[in-house]
Length: 463
Ligand code: GLY
Ligand code: MN
Ligand code: MN
Image (cartoon, rainbow, N blue to C red; front, top):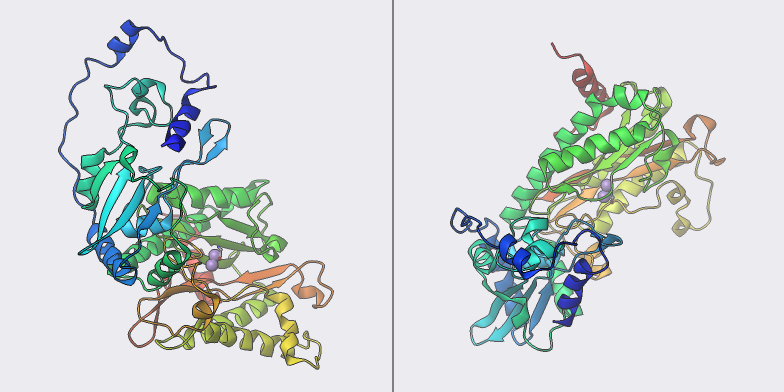
């Protein structure tokens, strides 16, 4: 409990914001004469029954183990201001709680005769009766608004809910699930249930409309000295309007910036004739995120050289999609994409002859992997063992990106001058079905002719 006390002390000491009269008369005055809040208990979360199933499966795998899954705490951004809270994904997975209302909460699954007894421990809200109501910037209702109490959490999740002060001895707030439990959770999260797939569809749909908004705003980006920031802010604003926010920092990379894989400075211009690589995803309130990339001609039409590179990446993506079905593996998906890249770059005479096929010299232009699992985390299921991640057979419900790219840096003397400064990535979100694959992001055009027609339709002045 010490940690909690310190956490809330942090908010009340050394800050000018929380100063107010300390007299008893003031305290009595500010904490009284408030009308009773209206409304009953909140409804059960849609995710609650799925979370119960997930806990039951975990319980069956670790019948004698006490499982502790904390939500995590607030992270300081600067001095006494915090980042917006986002619970850890495993906590969200097992409780169904998304959004930002449960900092410091802990889920404890205690072994019992019937499997495990699950209890959610939460910090009780500091309501109007308490002094912290007006003096605690981190927890007081005057500062952060009305938060769910124990009964509300119980109603939402169906979990027995108790005060964090009653956390059983021996559990530290910073504790993590043990490595085997973390691994099992990651493995379980590889196969999405119906709720998760539906949430992913919502995240992807919101991301597609975000890309449309960016295309509509391109003239403003072109006119601004930091057009990439215009692109970023249009998408990020859209993500806040339509979801919880962005699932990761938006990459808005125009011209040669597109050859920097994680370009998030986004402080360059967006110029006619250049390409814009936009890698962005909306995270919905349940915390599931999309992860999509399109590389768009700023002027609305690809140049010959841009299209030539684009076509290779598209062929690689199509080849990767073609191998996805139950039983295939991520390693095979990657190999399919890289096979196309190697073949085409060799035909162009760019890849020098090599005595060692394992040298894979073509990787100079695509150093990342073709796929990663996707869900509550943009790079989902990261505790899964590498061999299982890469070589485990696909099951229906698995969901991952397919995102080959080619990145010819401006100063790359190994490629012809016409290609230098061109970076292309095409990223879609793929769902393994009973007999193949569904491209969940198919609504976002990915073939050059379709992209040009789509951009034209969006940029045509509306009547
Ligand atoms: N946006 C990060 C990635 O594509 O993995
Ligand atoms: Mn990705
Ligand atoms: Mn991405």
